[in-house]
Length: 244
Image (cartoon, rainbow, N blue to C red; front, side):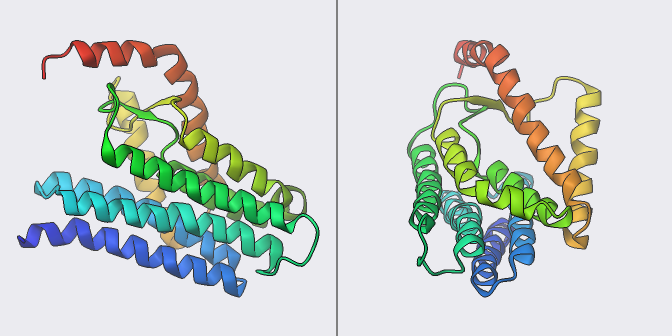
């Protein structure tokens, strides 16, 4: 295998390792750092794809590795964060079984989504996500968790996390359409995307302004869902009419 394949695969491997560390931190009680490591996984997920395209190093091996890393970093790690923070790792009170069940549903939904798109992709998938991508779920859950802790909203918001996991799980395996970052409508949109992406690569390593990251990822989800409802069918028809 050429050396150029090592670069994107190294980013993928590091994302998986940080996901495993995040799970360990959640189990040991350091939930805030565990959430930040999920956000590190988001950054690395973008880097591995970008490096693969830049170097012409895309491969089936890399795609499979990416799926494993996504399952660990955006499937198991967020579920572990919620599970250990709400139960302490012991199911000894009423309702804690439901928390464990919600975490399992979320992790299973991530696995189903990844397996589904490893097998085949629907018409329009070049320009659209079908269902919420796992990376976006990781970004929202990780940044949202830290934001809640920073503003002291944990007592109110944290008990709602199992519901959020189930909702996100359902949306991941659904057919809701969201535009991909690769879409370019105008120069202002290009500039907006680049500036915010660069900001994320500064804020996450410094572990500052999680509320900005949460607002950014949540806005992308909400705006993307609305855009998908309004324009998704047109994009699918446009791609299907394009000669292959």
